Length: 237
Image (cartoon, rainbow, N blue to C red; front, side, top):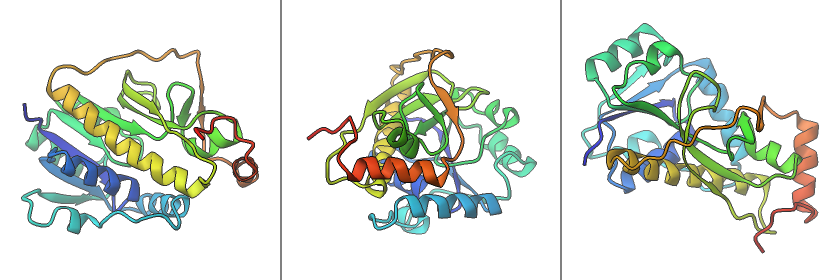
């Protein structure tokens, strides 16, 4: 069964490019790609590039879609009228978030079935930003979660989640890179399950976990030191 989905991504966001690469490998072809070109997009792209510094870089968007008839549009904000009008005209079943700002209700109401996100952390324990860093600082397992979007922040029903094995040779940067790969793989799994009518909807317990903002540098450094010293509690080796 085919699935008509729109892929929303901040301009050249490495997390989104990695996800799109994996979706295309799985023959999951978006009906449209809508990039947000904005100062927020620039800021988020640089933030993720630093988190994955020294790791393999995913191909640029133009390389990923070369030879494929996938229309690409640019908007100033994924929540603006231009993006809304584009989506209304395309009538996607699913919106796939490949690294975006928080998407508002006016956009979430457009797809005929749902909006899906792949969160780089294990829900419901770690919601919000910088999950890899917070997991290191709080000595929690690493992983990713594909979930439906609701009006909250990372509070929608879970489709599939998986813990990432962490090894003694891992660094903060390698964990961010490997989490991006895992997130892309889980998104591919989730879309296939949705297409086949097999997607789980596991409600999250609102009393479990916290919603985090960007981790302060001193706390991130403490988490990195724990990992480097071999004091992290969740190694696979």
